[in-house]
Length: 317
Image 1 (cartoon, rainbow, N blue to C red):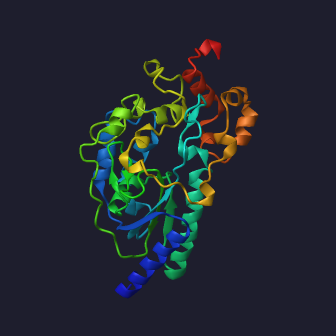
Image 2: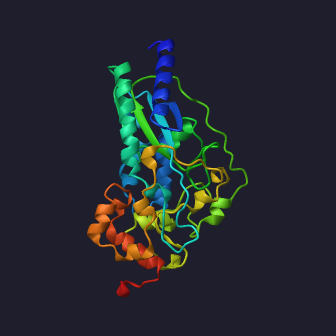
Image 3: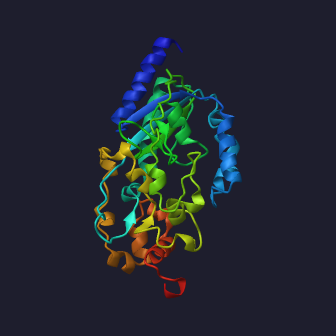
């Protein structure tokens, strides 16, 4: 492929991503980075992955993204912001993370990336591509940093100086060649420690990783069984996820709201009162959250989280 063709193709794909509504995009050269799997391996060895065994099972592939697509040469990374105000602020209603107030982001991002993949295939007919969104052995945050979208904050999330950290990431691994963004964004956290101080359970580690065993998001979404008693009273009104470390970040103080029409918060979800949550049946839950991230967690875990927040012991549930 000539340089002129690479330039034209790079512009076309960036423009396609913009037309799909993505706020950020970058392209990195697809190369093995075995240090990625080494770092994740150290995190797992320390037990910080909790019960998320899928990290261990996919460790080798996470260190070599070229193993995911035959002839992989490029990693396209795109970011889509989803920030919205907290409708439960100032009330005693339960809190669910902002990303769960909208349609399941996996579906939204994958549909957009699939349309971009078709453009790549049209422009480079012999190319092979795969799209990923928080599913599969791809270290999205690492590749977002390599593609220049931002830097890793103390709370382990990618922060962009213009739009903060409230954005979803999607990745396309492809055999097509582009012009690459080789400059990583400068770390702008400085001496700021607000996210560490704001974490109610002390889950943020000094190496900019998260100890899942102490993370409210992990505990309310992934963890099976009863929640640790040591955190009773520290989860506030939170029954799904947690945005505390992001809410205090200076780069999110002026976070721009979502603009994509597919990421409009669902009023049926955001308007739920305590009484409605407590009176909800399993069938009603399944129907209401059929296209929501809350579907995966399920009715029983959410009720467990509610009981924990409301100080209900197992025998009183």
